Length: 525
Image (cartoon, rainbow, N blue to C red; front, side, top):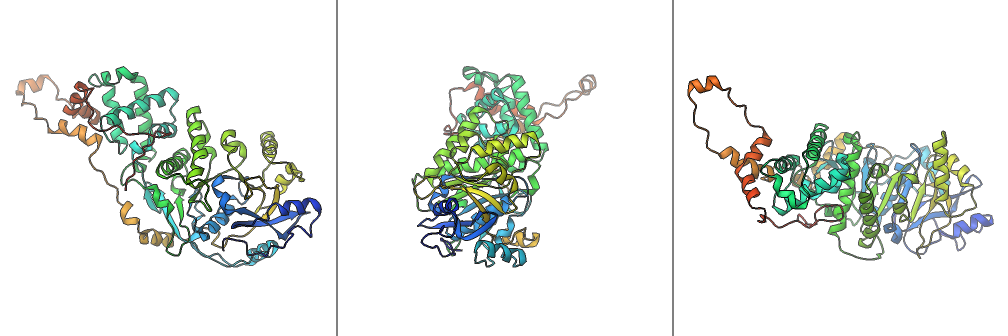
């Protein structure tokens, strides 16, 4: 699969088509490097001479892949990812269902593949693509992806904890205090320790000048953190923290590396993985230089289950997402949101998605019908009856419109999509495990590290305090022996906390500069 189509392009690609279809075909006759999606459908037939393509240079103008479950969205991602890799562009894919791992293995030649290739004029040949496999916190197969609580930041953490606006603001105060005092929040126990202190008699005055922290709000945050950990989320936060620059690598043969985040083990925690994907994007945004318009993207990022990111999000959060999507284009990164209907994506974000691949929609209920009408309104005018077309598309077919090489929308085109050249299904567990362990990143990230951070620094003095003098037997009989102090009691009673409370104006460490999402901007390598 090279940078341009393997179908010879006639001088007039629409010469054998009726006028409306011919005009559509001409809209996709690009001169530069392209990705091939498939062939134009007109009068219920695919026309191999009318290839539907996306200019490679327009992939950083973002996109949307939408459609009902089972309509072929995953195969579309695989098809686009393969061609990006072949063109030397790194790709990030979130594998929610566990069936994208097949991109690392050659596809299987069978009657269905040969039939589809013949319909769209594709010269199909099995091919594997270079891939790295990751897993959130090491849960499931893959190189562990972790973030420190400090770098994840208060805005994203509030989203994943389900906090309201007031609680989110209070969490921001807690992070501000920890940043200013040089207390690194590596994992969740560090954050719990600082919250406990700031609601104690010793720590409460620390936040007086900037609003304070109510015991009720602190209780909500602590309970949310406890529930979050009980759901198994603790391993996602810690060190070594993943350096998102790893996603920009290419293979030794020059092809772009396909980074596949395996999510089946955490698919019951959708709020967590959708927010973690946003952290990856935010971290990339603040680590990359401005490059403007480039001949090909530096990375294309597929954001699966995108509706989960926006559901219940605060206005401030949505503004941050919108700004990140708008500005990251100039850093050479393209984002494709993947969801069921365009209405899952806020209009301010949807308006920035220049490339659209819309698979079939269903209209079984009044809400479905309403969503269908709303989707039709998001497309340019076309000769198709889009309401009828979108409900009658087959698996592996889609309605497409992209940005041309001059940045204008192409005509709406019903398209029969090509077949991926890699395996359309998961690789077996043994092959994936072998690939993970053979990676050069495995040794760097596999083993979790629990170095000294806020919790250890604050709890250590309490553990080192001299033991209380032994009491007389009579006294022991009169007063029951006090239970072992809890972690929070140790932290609140520690000498360093009392020292901090007496030194409100002293800055132990340099305050961290935070980004749109409250994530930190420091590089780790």
